[in-house]
Length: 358
Ligand SMILES: *Cc1c(COP(=O)(O)O)cnc(C)c1O
Ligand code: SF4
Image (tube, rainbow, N blue to C red; front, side, top):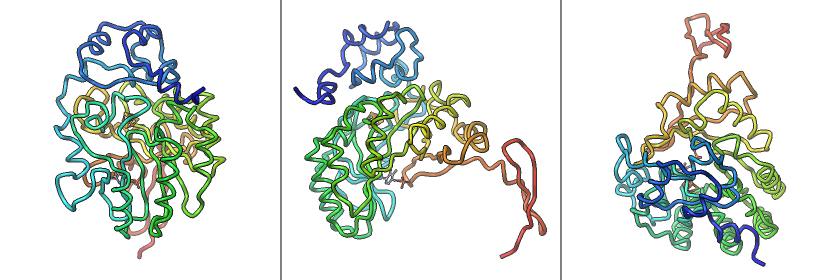
């Protein structure tokens, strides 16, 4: 019998009939499913986390298309060409996106375990308007020729959908390049298909030791942190792989103080270190998920800093064409004079320390 993760993928929930066995569809959902030309779907495991009757269920909203996707006021056309600097600067393979000198994003696949409705790479992954060629060997060769690149972020799509053999090949090839000092994977599979963390994959991830492997996954709501996910993360850690989280700030899903705090505390309980919370990017068709820009900074101020350990604190960033820009709350700096630096804590209490000159 095929491995369970492959069975899950073969049985992906991607027809109206499949969905109707799990949830009671609303008129809007039904209309979107039958009239929008969009790739959608989820693993049976992840789909089973949907609430049967609540269309606002945080898992359901990430899976089922909505007519809201046709309303586009703030989304930018050709978003990825702008964001990934595809029309400007040095010539690079399609698989290499570059915003920094020492690190690149290396896209190795354009399919995913679930097709997130809020995905900012929609043009490649979901609608597929943007046709790119993701040739792994071409990308590896480019990295080999760029000695200043020391940190490779392997992304997609979802790179963990590649076979064990292919992942082994990519990791081995990269770690054989002397100037590569770390490898990172961006993958949602530990969350949407925890079955993927098989004995075979564990062997691949523990095989090479010259460079560390980091994984960043994407959990947006505490409901996604199940017992299965907890076990999958523990297996990854036992391979010597670090696991972090990159959440997306999503309106009505995780943009309230209670959910935001619970998400970050629960991530730590699951041994996942919160890394980033992303502002929902101005990609087309996702206005309904987007909050005001300052919302993330407010949530860090009101839900995290001081209210729980600093280990639970992600950095809130806006990903742009010129890199990720942090936007953290600054309420704690009250000002300074010749003598003192004035500070405020999360409760509004104030204090001062001597203001030492250079
Ligand atoms: C996000 C990203 C990186 C990695 O950024 P870190 O802040 O180091 O996590 C690198 N290159 C590109 C093109 C990116 O979008
Ligand atoms: S898994 Fe990542 S790339 Fe794939 S649809 Fe979701 S957000 Fe987009």
